[in-house]
Length: 489
Image 1: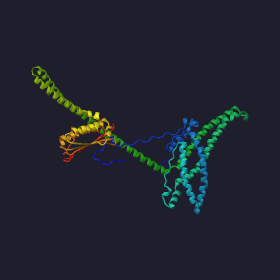
Image 2: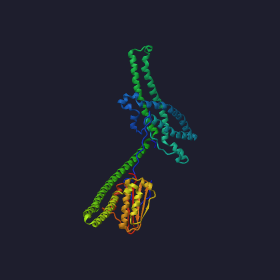
Image 3: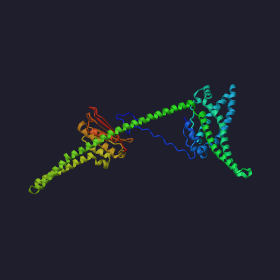
Image 4: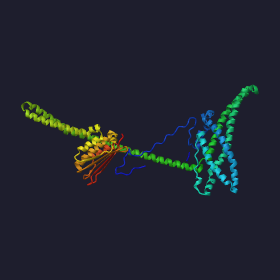
């Protein structure tokens, strides 16, 4: 185991969609076919990974065919030649270099030998990981170049983990010799014992003797498999002791892992809190949206009842009077029909306004840019419209465009009726994945979001889309409204 932000704005921070979430962990690549997956196992888990037969049960019975056995055979076959060379070189060079240090000649040679232990230890850890599927942590040490002059030499000479690697080269060489003798010798002897009855006539074995030799060979195969796994386990533990981080390094690694776990727990707790705030925000905004929809439904019902319905009733009365007077008084009938015609036009205009308040046809037919231009053209207050990118507006969802339209309509109505404004500036653009709408007038300000007001309804509509709604209206300094809604659904 070898050891971003935008400038602050007046608009409030988005709740929910604007919050950052932790990135999921990257996927782990599967192990290559025929190669065991390396695991950062601890010493107590080496038994399961390297020598499962020693735990008994089914693994004990299936030891000759177990992958752990043949991984152990593979590592001793390759490791024998590697460690034989490393051990012979170590036993030849290190004692000579140590003896020559008394006259100063051996110090550079000894330092060189100790420095070479780094790549040797790294290669041995990599070999054990590749062949046995265990991962030995590398020790964390001070680099030789971190201290000037003689301090560099002392750093190397006093590094206990380098001396441990020297000891590993020697001890592992001897252990590897035992592993080779046990594995290959035991396997060869067992196979020879099983094959011995083939030469019965030549050796003059009796049937009982032949069966005995076959039994010895079979038992030898199982015993060799168990011993091979056990010696591989000893080898892994030797590598952990001499090539790993040592007791102090293990403590530091455990502390580092505990710190990482605490950070992950804190991050998880933060995500839980963010999810709770998000759920509360969604509940509040959905409640507002339902209330606003109910209020809007009641308004439409009232407008239809008090407006268009009453006019249609009056229109029916006028047409009935014209029908009765048509024969007796043609002039009176003509006047009644003219009045009915005017009433029909007024009812149609009122219905158009009502439908426009539900969903304007121009928004669906010609897009947001044309719909906003139509609002500006009908406004009694001059409106300067700035839409730098109409194609980007067209890419926004219908819900986002509808929100921008109704916010603009309400703002222009307020500017004309209440603000006493002489000019309104309307800026609409897409910034990133957000549709941003800014409306500012030069009126007397003082606008408030009162319960049940149009502004409160607009806020509910915007926040239901995970958008932001920001109102600035200081008395005597005009009103500025900034709305942002996500372009995508």
